[in-house]
Each structure stands twice: as structure tokens, then as C-alpha cells.
Length: 226
Ligand code: SAH
Image (cartoon, rainbow, N blue to C red; front, side, top):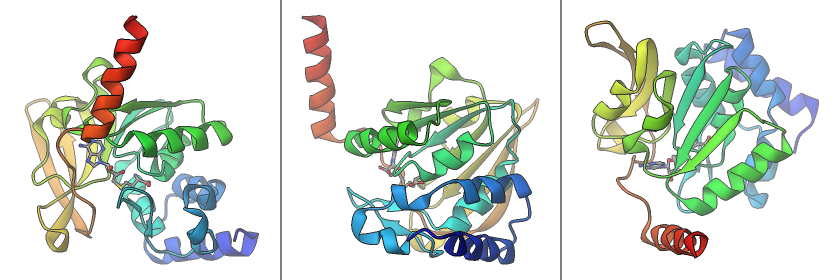
């Protein structure tokens, strides 16, 4: 359910959790989370909990989305990459804070649904790609900011390379869901610096794209060449 009261209560919870950046709070307030939920979870859209979406993936907890967004320190003129579109909720929030938001997802059906939501919300500065986020998006690099919303076992070197000098990446790292750390990586002139922000729990950043989707992509490519 979405009443002004539900949204205000959520904003109060975010403030309590340490979200103080008013641009981030306002982006969360302006984003209707219920449209990113599966129908059977819509009445829980404004609870501060992660919710299941298709393909065993999750729509992240609002507090985690907001704290990660705040840690990314996004500026209005920046080019931002998100890895792991999922429902598109985090992408929608980031898109309100930056110039252009690029987002990559390995499950094509999830991406198709997220694209539909971006259209409904008229988020015209979101650019999507079906692919493996481990490789980043070389054609569009460098990015001022990168947010990874699935956990690799180590910070992917390709993503560090696609960060502009002075750029920031926020990424949950750890093989086991029980022992992941949220890291903030800052690219410097000579290398990079890493801060440890919090303990978190994300689905793994998987290598490659699902077999079915690969067959579909190949089929479509053949069709368009014919
Ligand atoms: N940001 C999402 C939550 C993401 S859950 C939201 O706001 O709803 C993590 C997502 O990362 C899942 O959709 C999963 O399919 C995707 N993912 C996992 N490994 C990936 C990879 N290598 N490349 C792209 N996406 C990946």
C-alpha cells in the first residue's frame, strides 16, 4: 500500500538509520517502491525489508539502498554505473541524482520488467544493458561513480579500471552471504584506496549470463542479420 503516511514512516526510519543527505531522502520519497515489488508483496512495499523478486533475486532493503546511495556521494552532472539492475529500484533512485545512469543485468526477463518501470516513471536518463557486469561497460567508461548491488568475492579489477580518477565505487564484497563487507573504493592518480563501511548481505555477483538468455540473444542476433 502507498499512502503518504507509509512513505513518511519509511523516511523517518531512514533518518534513524543515519541517512542525512536530503537529496537521497527526497529521491527515496519520490520513488514508488510498490511498482518494483511482485504483486503479492506490494502491501509490504514501505516496510524496511528486502523483498523477493523473480529468479531468486531480491529487491534490496530501503535502508541499505539509501545508505549505499549516500556513500556514493553522487553529484548532478555525473555519469553513474550500476551493476545488478534487479527490480530497477536502486537504479531509479540513482537516476534522480545524476546526469545519466547506466545499469547492467544478467537476467534478461528482470531487465525487461525494469525497463518497463523506468518508462512508466519517465526516467529517461536510464540506459540499460543485458550482460555480465563483471566486465563493466567499457564503451561508456570512465564512470564518476559505480554501484555494485550483488557481491563479488573480490573487487572486480575491470570496474576499478572503469572508474574515473577521483571516482567512487560502492561494492559489497565476500564469498559467504554471512560475511560480506560493504566497501567504498576511491580511485586516485596512482591507484585506489578502500574504506570498509558496514556488514551487509547480498546475492552473489555471478559470472556470465544464463544459458537460456544467451540462446535468446544469439537467436535475436541471427534474426536481425537475416
Ligand atoms: N539493485 C537491485 C537489487 C539487485 S539483486 C534492486 O534495486 O532491485 C542483484 C542483481 O544482480 C540480481 O538481479 C542479479 O541477477 C544481478 N547480477 C548478479 N550477477 C550479475 C552479473 N555478473 N552481471 C549483471 N547482473 C548480475
